[in-house]
Each structure stands twice: as C-alpha cells, then as structure tokens.
Image 1 (spheres, protein in one colour):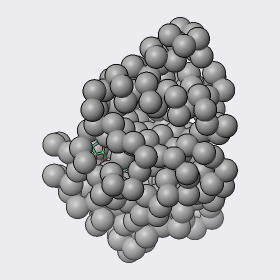
Image 2: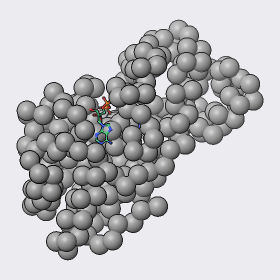
Image 3: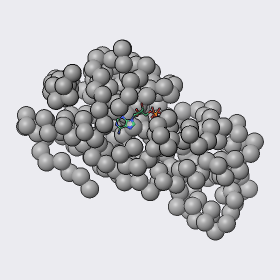
Image 4: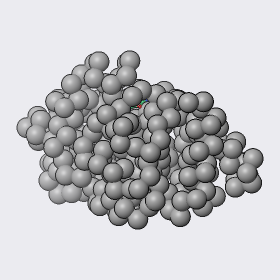
Length: 255
Ligand code: NAD
C-alpha cells in the first residue's frame, strides 16, 4: 500500500485513540549511526551477544565483557538523536502519546526531549557495584578505563556492572510500569523492532490496536493492525507533516 495512505490511517488512529504508547527498538537508532543487533555491521556479525552480555559470564569472568563487549558500546554513548526521536518527543509534548517504551540502552529519547521513558533493558548512564550496590556514573567508569584499569572496581573490592540489562539479568521495574502503560492504552506504535526479544515482544499484544513501522518483515506482522514497511525517520516525518496539516501539532523542535 502507498506509504502516504498508510500514514493517513496511522494519523486517524492516533487522533482517535484516547491513550497511545510508542514502543521502540534498535531500528529507531540506526539512523543515529548505532547498528541494530542483526543488521549489517550489527553486533551479531562481530561477537555473540548472548555470551559477551550474559549475567552468568559476567559473574564468573567480568573481563570478557570489559575486553570484548564494552568497545561495542562506546559508539552508543556518543550518538545523537535523529528526526525519529524528535518526532516521538514532539508527539508527547503535543499530548498525542503518553509515554515511550524502549528496548534501547542509548538514552536518545531523553536526549531528544521525551519525558516519560520506560527503559525495558536499562541504560548506560550508570554502573552498579555487584558487592555493595554503590553506583558510579558512566563518565567515571570510562575515566577509570582510560587510565588503564582493565576492570573498574569499587572501593569495597566489588566489580562495577553497567546498568544495562544483560541476558540472564532480572528486568528492571520499568518493565512492570510499561506493562501497565501499554495495557491502559488503546494504540501502540512499534518503531524499529524485530520483536524477537522476549518478554518485550509480548507488550504490543496487551494493546487493542498496533501499528508496526519497520524496515523488514517481522514474525509479528500478521498479528498487528497495520504494518508500515519504511525507515523510521521517513515514516515519522511524514506522520508529523500529516498531523501538522490537520492542525494537531506545530513546528517540529529538533536539536
Ligand atoms: P533488532 O536488532 O532485533 O531489530 C531491529 C529492527 O529494526 C530490524 O527488524 C530492522 O529491520 C529494523 N530497522 C533497522 N533500521 C531501521 C530503520 N532505519 N527504520 C525502521 N526499521 C529499522 O532490535 P530490537 O528488536 O530492539 O532487539 C534487539 C535488542 O538489542 C534489544 O534489547 C535492544 O535494546 C538491543 N540493542 C539496542 C541498541 C541501542 O540501544 N540503540 C542497539 C542494538 C541493540
């Protein structure tokens, strides 16, 4: 179907829905230069994330993460938001969505101005000592690494682990908050997710209507209300234009 026609339908759904959530995955941030897991240049083509980012491996030998995993996270912390992030932040400011539920750890929604952000897989702003639970900032962690420390250790002797969710980690409280938020919504707009990672991929099923904006087909396509096969930035820019034409939003604030 014609992209503009689909965007008109999405605008209709959005304007009719009493409560809407946007749920994002790695695909929203590829246009900021952060590769997704499975795409070209993605993490899967370099390391096995289920090994390098696994709680069991970290607890037995944290060096595996600091030597093989951390270097892949550095680009994430340097990235800047793109148009898609700004449109999502603008939708919240305009009162058209209540929150963003994200699988990403890059913090780009907050950097674009989104306020209610539920981070299903944690973030890279802080790290926690596994022994005494003391927290340290990401910059301090990096400072230690730059000064030659192979593995950042707390004053108590415990190793610091970034506050991103590793395979085998329990999910943060934000997951329960997101379940509530999506359950209370009429529409979820999923942007840039293969919906392969569980249990995050169960969330859209809690909502009556689901629009899925993604470059490639996903296993969820046949269960959702609408599939828009497009780059996130293109689809979300067109959505903003259409909402502006209808008087629902003003100029997009970006950067
Ligand atoms: P995924 O890699 O499984 O799927 C990403 C999907 O986005 C793919 O289907 C791809 O076709 C699509 N895509 C890529 N670029 C796009 C674009 N410009 N516009 C629209 N769609 C696009 O990602 P996932 O579903 O989020 O699950 C992977 C896990 O890895 C998640 O836990 C995620 O948090 C984590 N991850 C996070 C980051 C980040 O923080 N930016 C980056 C890589 C992986």
